Image 1 (cartoon, helix red, strand yellow):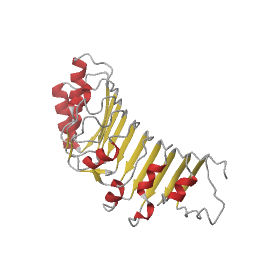
Image 2: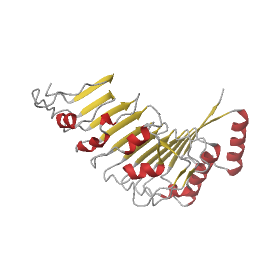
Image 3: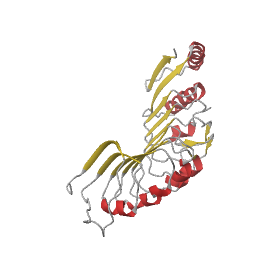
Image 4: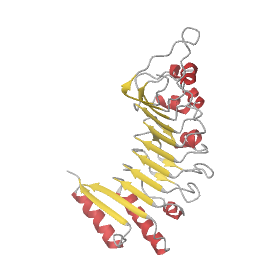
Length: 273
């Protein structure tokens, strides 16, 4: 038991360990991975038992409770990869805001916690080692995101998928200075892709999956603008879906602007049925 390095279960709830004065003080120093645990209580006793855990994948559902000790997440000083999934209940917002993320974190996946964009920036924007951030299924709400310069300084991979309220993203090359890969998915209300993102010197690949027609076309314009500036390293992958009328309008606008000529564009059109 003490030699276990990786534990992956099928969405199980774990009971609290006995206090140290009531049982042998079992410390799993070799445990690096703990996956698919539901409603995991981050008590001080639990944190002491798995001090070197590097990867956690946790989900929370049912009633919101401070019994789960969200502030103690920061006790995992070796934690590098964290996935947190909430059931989408807006009551989890305050719980998520109180999470203390350790400075060791490199990869973070959030789903269903419902914080707003400013709160997200305050929660994780200053993490010094954060390189990959995935914001999934209403993990963030709000119509406008204006990033703050000096935050997300080491972020290389950013995924925003299912933030259905997002209308305006006021981002430019100063906000994510070392970004390499950007994926936007299911942003049906996003009006425009921020062209300044295309000016990030390190950016290699942009991917849009089933976003609005206007944001998709503006992303294609951004690629064309970068190619006019002799930036041949940027690639754009687009998946666009719509009914017959929407698809025809999209094709006509793309054709009129000559946006399909780039060899760095991969365009996939899917009809809604």
